[in-house]
Image (tube, rainbow, N blue to C red; front, side):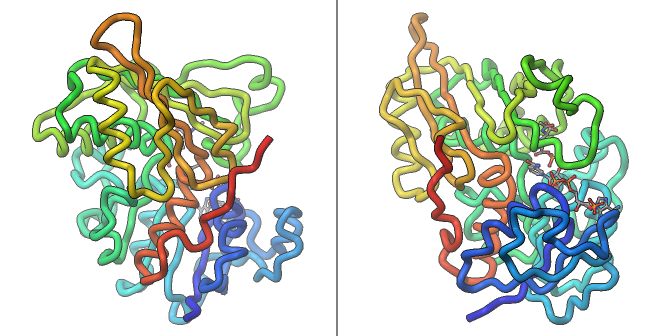
Length: 342
Ligand SMILES: NC(=O)C1=CN([C@@H]2O[C@H](COP(=O)(O)OP(=O)(O)OC[C@H]3O[C@@H](n4cnc5c(N)ncnc54)[C@H](OP(=O)(O)O)[C@@H]3O)[C@@H](O)[C@H]2O)C=CC1
Ligand SMILES: CC(=O)N[C@@H](CCC(=O)OP(=O)(O)O)C(=O)O
């Protein structure tokens, strides 16, 4: 079987990553690619690393004939995404990578994103795209919301522990480091090489990062009562990768056994031997998540360390995994690339 897909926002980082992954996918055919400022340009000039592929030129979204498309990946900035998806055919399968459909509660969306949602009906229809935990809903879904990349990393470390009730829910600290491609390809002053390299800094500290909305929603639902974690991201001078060190109160050996059991059958989630440390270097360019557990010298405290690639498992790889499920294709198709090392 062959399915036709469109990528909206193909001139951005996650768009390029989707194309890289789909390049070896036996059942997907790219029929349309959109750009905004770069509309009209051939992909080879926007992304020379994709020159070997026979790809359509970038066009504006309104030029795409969606009647020929089986599934659209929407890799647009949030707010733009909801305005665009609102106008697309209501029977089109969509995997959205933006933040627009992750939060179910319209009030929570307004709180974290600063303005009211403009497509509340679609927000209610959307399925949260953390594949391993929403598989059945994603398979049956029409509109799937990709998770935040930081939010995914923290959830892989914590969800099985919250579900098992083996950590103190009021003492969870997520200390996260993220590579710069997480911020997208648009030019921003603080992302200039001269200002980013050879140093690093925290950002959105003090409980204001937007991904706290996702943590609140998902962890509170799992626990059946409000859970508020402490979360501070840091911007590091690396292109790709996220590493979260999560501090918890609980027994390290129990925590390790619980995670190992929860992910035993998951193809993309590797729980390392007790005491081993994951590294972004070991998941780079791949759809894998590595999780390590280390006991603290203070009894009853532990660190769970999770690493993934923000452009792969944190966005485009996850999006492709979800698209496979929605189209009835084996979930791992196109995603078994080994990490790029060194
Ligand atoms: N980067 C990451 O690691 C992750 C990103 N995400 C989310 O995925 C989405 C895409 O991210 P990313 O690829 O990094 O972003 P980029 O900034 O790299 O790309 C954005 C894309 O959207 C297009 N675009 C921008 N404005 C408009 C508009 N008004 N109308 C139509 N198209 C527009 C751009 O086109 P052009 O350049 O031609 O103007 C470009 O193709 C975002 O919502 C982001 O938050 C989610 C998880 C991780
Ligand atoms: C380094 C960096 O800036 N990372 C982005 C995360 C990218 C992502 O997942 O953000 P969305 O929720 O916008 O999709 C951030 O922390 O805001």
